[in-house]
Image (cartoon, rainbow, N blue to C red):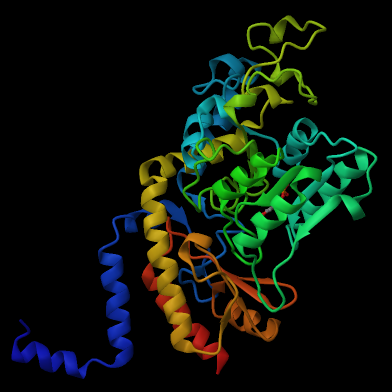
Length: 430
Ligand SMILES: *Cc1c(COP(=O)(O)O)cnc(C)c1O
């Protein structure tokens, strides 16, 4: 029961006080709120902490990265070549330190998961093995407006096999005047055209619209038609609760510098389903790090391929990048994906409701929470708004021709951040 005095105080609160209080309440009830302190935030012009909503583009730096990278620098300086075996974290098996935590992030078995290379490199390596076109079955299904690198990679693979990209690419296109795809339309296309499709390769979450695709339904439909099904999870890893193994996806790739905070240009991930783990007859581009660990240093002439996703490795891995990613994956293990996703659903719903209150803002990301991660993409008149927001210390990103992407990341963004963003956005609009 509210006492008289309290009721009076309550009445004196303005509307915006109430909204601020509710953001503070939501933060107070957020078990993950302490994780923000593990990250370094850029400062805005006045020295205060900026409002950072571009973790979908480059995740913030975990404070521990300095220590983890520093350890490898120290060992390099102290031990040089001996560090391969005698560093505190020996470099020879260093990638193995990342395998299990990364597998947990994407819902995979450790043997299905490998951290290596860059994302587009991994996409090519996977397509070398899993895009095997024949005269009857040679097409690739992608979403129209896929990330350009994926588009280039897919088209160049088609041409590499001597097919014509123009009639070999099926681009899933939203209905007229709808910004995103309907799952039923994706599945219809697969049922209709599946017989000529060698590979279905979609983003787990489309980078532009923020739409999350129904990975299990698409995978099942593709398999029913005899297609191989892979996903680019660049915008899904660390954002959605993925279950790549249970969903029976053939392969997936993702980068680790977006939601996974692995640092600029950081080392990427790949998933190969267990059922392909001993498919040594698949074509693949080989390198010595994919060779049997027991015989790798015998330096023999014959490639003896490792089972599982490790068998796709080429080079000895970049330790400094891996050290950075290791610091971040430890945080993911503490926070856990189910808890992060649970907060993310609330945080993005809160952003959505504040945008609706401002009014006149078109959100092109689906309203169904199951069809999106943390990002909302809003359609705006011109780049001016983005520039005004930047000048106020707000990090959001601009995507041609008319979209601003806002990604409140559950690991380090608060409801208060979203609240302050809504106030600044409203001021920038008027
Ligand atoms: C970020 C992103 C890329 C970038 O590719 P890199 O090889 O890491 O430079 C490619 N595809 C998608 C879908 C992305 O979101």
